[in-house]
Image (cartoon, rainbow, N blue to C red; front, side):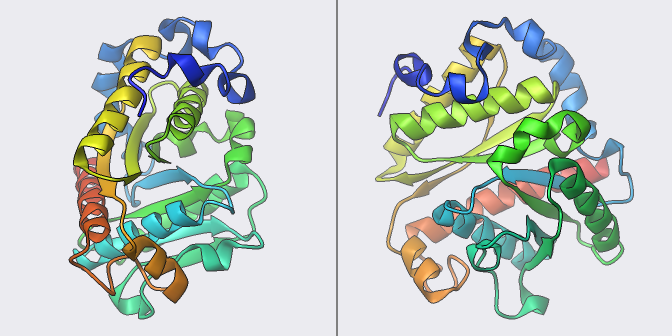
Length: 277
């Protein structure tokens, strides 16, 4: 586990943000005070009669992360929220997300023919407005964004108002997550980023991983990221993938299921706060 990501950041920064490591935070984003003043209402201010939208950058190969998103969405539904996962119709999209087999009792998965970030944003807005009509208990739309599409964020930066990232605890994954966060924040000044740490062998490792990432964001960008849960590794994650069931359905007492429930509560609470504001 790294104490300082600076030793490995240079391997990743050129891929997404060539100049981010040397660019002052004021160029990338407003000051922390300005951001904090606008974050609370920005997630929903442009769509007052719609569910909040969370962008989740996940590639077709990130099956574990997709399983975690499925578990988060399914638990939000169990809390009485309306949870829908929107994903572009890619070759693996239908088997990426493993939500409840009973739609009325769990989250929904909806595919879109969107082929760019702007068309995906349009589909997300339409869905968030449609679902809001039946979401008396609040809810959220989780939008799976192929990471490669982030390069075309200029005309759809609003989709990045609220972003949820997943990171494993190894140095490479943390550095890659930092680079992705820096790119998102550069494209959408004032955006909000949450991070869920997964794959940790224990609580301490998970906390240290998030601490290292948060410290790098604060030191290099002068801003903060929010913790959206720490998921301890156990076999329940892989059982869910193999059985095609949402994480936690087979063994709700597992450590991984508990971490996913905590992440879901944090997302749902943030979504309801955005709706109220």
